[in-house]
Image (cartoon, rainbow, N blue to C red; front, side, top):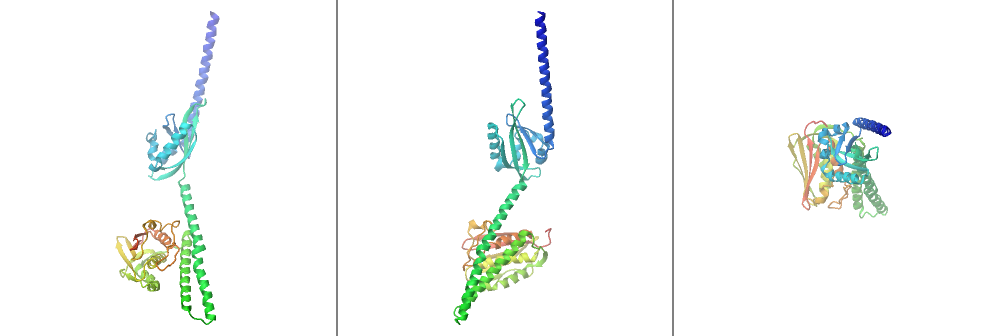
Length: 389
């Protein structure tokens, strides 16, 4: 009897020791969990944790500082309120699918920060387990990759610009020079043979090809300087009516060749605050395009309207107009293509791209209204007084 009692006491003591060891181990585990959560609090990544029911029960300080929301607002499914509506279904589906399969996942989505801005987030989620390999839920780390995304978009745009330049240099610049060289050779032969027939015609073709090559080189040079940051920007207060009059005089020969009437409906004095050279380029391109796409005997009108702190200048024509599906692509370099004029005049499609860049630089805008087969109207807006450029 005494032996049985003694054995029972020993068994109880052993169980108590084992329970004590287990309690001590659990305390150590809890301390370790608290430690890693403390470490995560100031971690530069946005850290989250979810339970077996897929609901989130932890967000570190970095996460809460980013969203500007409280823990109670984020708890459970609350965090999803900040996800962009276009990304919500993809985000939740990716998470649920990976959770059910106990697989790690990587996804990107937009989430609103405390300033009300949507930022691109790269989210790494992975299952985590207890010491006995019991599945506890998921833990994830998120990083703001908006700058990376923007850099990728800038790289795409730069590649489009590069491709456009190669296209211009390889084709559009080559064409006028081939014309100049070819007709120059014919001109020399005719003069040597004292055959003056068509000399005037050949000289005219050479002149037009030279003008086109020069216009193209000027646009290329200005575009290159703007993109590389080497173009000087000198805004000043000046009378844009005078400038437009000078451009009209410069393009009078083009208008006369097609018997196009240019109507000047501008006031005698029209003050704007902008870079004079840039605006001269914009006006020259807009009037040149209007002449290019207007039939012989047509009309181009230039007018202006003063409103509050800005001036709106309008160049309209009764030419061929622009197809509706082309309008949104006029100012995008990767989409822009040259369209022959009514007399088969050629261009590069670079002029309007340059105009758009110059208008942005001068805190202005450019937009177009067009009816196919009935003409186009281009508008530009400029500050009428000194602004914070």
